[in-house]
Image (cartoon, rainbow, N blue to C red):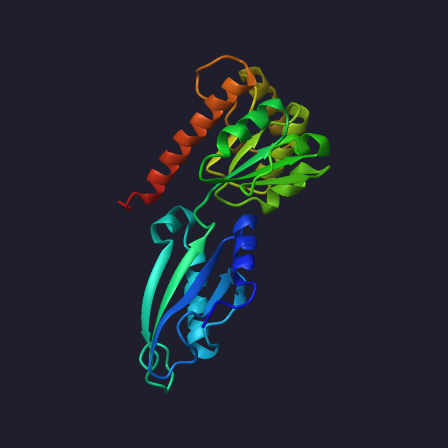
Amino acid sequence: MPAPHGYVERLAELAASGQPFVSVTLVDAVGSTPQGAGCKMLVTAAGLDMGTIGGGRVEAKAIQEAQAMLARPVELAGQAATRLVEWNLQRDVGMTCGGAVKLFFESYNHSQWQIVVFGAGHVAAAVIHCLLPLECRLTCIDPREEWLARLPSSSRLSKVQTDNPPAQVAALPADAFVLCMTMGHRTDRPILEEIFRQRRNFPYLGVIGSKAKRAVLRRELLAAGISADDVDAFECPIGLALGSNSPGEIAISIAAQLLERRDAWRHQSEAPAP
């Protein structure tokens, strides 16, 4: 049985959106089964998005399996991006028919490296250009539509135009690497304050600027009631100590530091518990 009409288009749409999802394909069916080989469906964390592998108990079990894949910690998802299962419908699914099915599960977007950049200025744009060729998913948030329009068009990049960037904090992925690169400390500080008030604990939180800027931000956050432990949970300056002060070279130093921290974070996440 071929894929349902519009399946490929919907898969491409979900892949481009960055939303994690699983494609489930019935690759083999033996005996009495609800559907034949080739049936497909798409599953998100919310449940069935499109298609069917036959309905009933076998489909319900497959949806649960797909959702379990999506529920795994994102740092472990890359180790299990695909799975092939064989279920006896009577023994494993609880159906009265005596058939068997093989299902192939393939997850998308779940293990992508998430990077969020607040700001779309010259250095932020240079950082985005450096990161776009990598296996990552970028989000750029800025109130200036004309600056966002200058950024490249890419399926890896989402552009968010808003007059209230701090309001975007609640929707950020828990595993996001977050960069504050707005027009200055007066626009960076409200974003940081919102991150700390919501108790968000990102793997990386950095603010472009000098040590003097860090001191000002720290003082103002403390005055706003943020705890001393929290206000020390951001990096400023950011980037490795190399290159000049040109936007392109600053961007390379920041991208290099992000890669360094990503690898250390993944290694720590994968290390066995003592």
